[in-house]
Amino acid sequence: MAENEPLTIWIVSGEESGDQLGAKLMRSLKARLGAERLRFGGVGGHAMAKEGLSSLFPLEEIAVMGISAVIARLPAILKRIRMTADAVVAARPNMLVIIDSPDFTHRVAKAVRQRAPGIPIVDYVSPSVWAWRPGRAPKMRAYVDHLLALLPFEPEAHRRLGGPPTTYVGHPLIERLNEIRPLPGERQRIEGQPLKLLVLPGSRRSEVSRLMEPFGKALALLQERSAHPFEVTIPAVSHVAEEIRARADNWSVRPHIVEGEAAKWAAFRQADVALAASGTVTLELGLSGVPLVVAYRVSKIEEVLKYLIKAPSIVLTNLVLGENVIPELIQWDCTPEKLADALLPLLSDTPERKKQIEAFGKLDTLMKIGDEVPSERAARIVEEVLSSKGKA
Figure 1 (cartoon, rainbow, N blue to C red):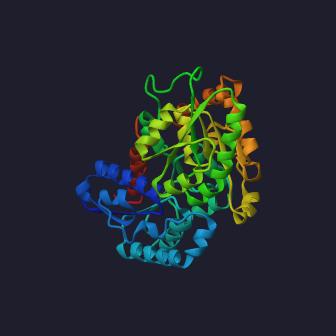
Figure 2 (cartoon, one colour):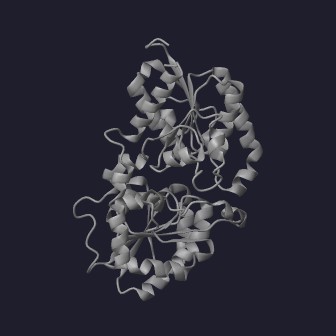
Figure 3 (cartoon, rainbow, N blue to C red):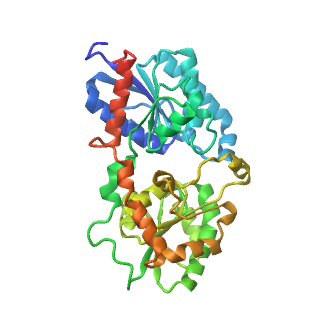
């Protein structure tokens, strides 16, 4: 293909986090290949729309989480999978990039590969094959030409499991360290002051409904047992903020609830300790240097599947570090008593607190990618795959 000939790249995401990754990738591709040369199509949200994508349908139609929610919406989701694959095949783009949400995006990719095998396919964000259903890795080779991984241990996991060629491109949090980490004077010494305790019960209604009660009771026990007074802040995402307020109304420890990303990062920079639902937030807290306890509860249907879990931890920070420095209290272990017991040592200058802080100091080295930022590295790999397939 001639250097200035137009390139059409389809990007298909399935939820808001993928929309954010897709938007950054589009921006980096335009900087790398020339905005006037690129044409985008696919499925995305508001962030990708700002970069020039006209989505096939609103992202909210497929951005459902949890087994029960997916089952309830399955007919509509299957219809959108067929519609998306049909549109990709009809457009014959130079490349298809799928982003996260494997239950949706991988089905699209399989259909496209079967019907239009000449379209290169890049997968941005690895499914958790290192945690459960490892057999997915070798199956991905049939429809994924290259995988862009967010976590540094994932390329080796795919090599070991027989997955597709994989490159670690870096986690998007690497681009936000200045927002996450405290400025001089923002995080005080823990002696002689009320401690700032963050509570993060999750961003999904199912998480909030299962965790707010044990979290509130754990804080009440902690208040009774701790010699250190503490103040509680809950950074809440907008779509669950009202539910969090309602459920916190009967807590004996009254939290300060904040909304918005700027308020969240400000709370992180000042925090001394945290109690958090499992998820990306554990990596955010680790990079911010905040010692924490992780908890999680799932539905009874999902609990049946736990025997499939192969990973030594469900906490991303523990997995990146290669050791379980953060306590994790899952399902029946997620009780007020056990949560309070795990939090108590983190409220003073103890070996448990020091161990976490020292371990978090290794994250930069483990997650570094050199001079590029993650979206730039991802765009470079996309261009290399295009060139190797004779599409750029």
